[in-house]
Length: 236
Image 1 (spheres, one colour):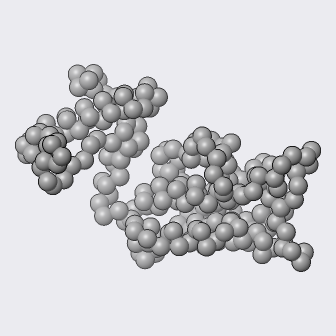
Image 2 (cartoon, one colour):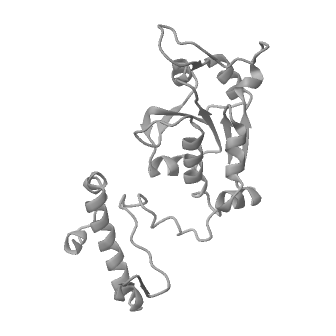
Image 3 (tube, one colour):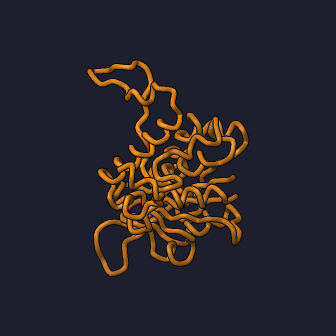
């Protein structure tokens, strides 16, 4: 997989990807990363990448032509996923991560300033996505968050192929179950006895029950559309 970033701040992007599981994925040649700065395509003396908005208003708007040139420098084809990070976009979910993990080439367009010329969204991007209902200074952090979520799903990245199957939001759409390790007792709370019982059937039932309880309590919106089994009713 090849993932590229169109960004005014390449030094913010690449160093972040050189750690932990994402770094290992690069070492194993499962993914490559690169950045392209729209400023490098500017032809004026000041290397201008933004201008004031038509119709007036505060802030500056990133210009579409330079972003277009930066994207085209990566030679995208009809299968390339071109993702614009935008707080007005569709909410990025685990389903998106699973979908994009099947792609061979992804280009992230990271906005800055007041925003990006709308024609980037309508004429260049194939997807417009956000990581939540809040605004950040730029699109680099959302792009990095999405990248982490996507790359960890690539075959061979995680130590075990089953590692991500019990993650929150995977498979059934429920939140993940609680995890414990040594010591048995910490600050007066003990590891649930069932997890120390060695009874794998009971452990599986307990974990499923905790997923149901946790999702219903913390994220009723997810619970309402989760893929529940007939036996789940008995666990609640």
